[in-house]
Image (tube, rainbow, N blue to C red):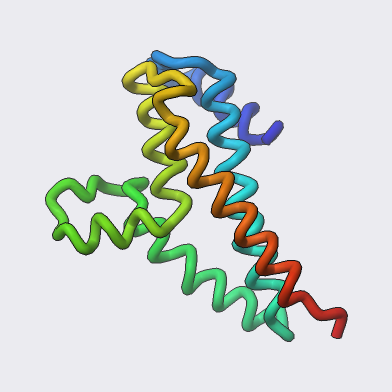
Length: 136
């Protein structure tokens, strides 16, 4: 998170972001999002036997997540089932909360649904990862 904050501050210095909301709320959403992404990685790494397989499975999970999260382009014109599928990915909730905070000045109370989803997903991924972990 320190590196993310430094990158954000550096970009803000050169690009002058228009930040409408609270930096603390943005930091909370970024931290929960990072925890969720790390927990997905731990879940996959805990269940695989080789590093190569883990890397392939992580790519299999992260590419659709990046494609459908709204990070690269909006899904407003996409079919309804694609929009619903995107809600299964934690990156979708993280990006929508961060955009609401930065662009619309959303408060913590307004992004609480995304915060709860990120927290719940993190807990589930870590619990399942701990359950399937083997020392072999």
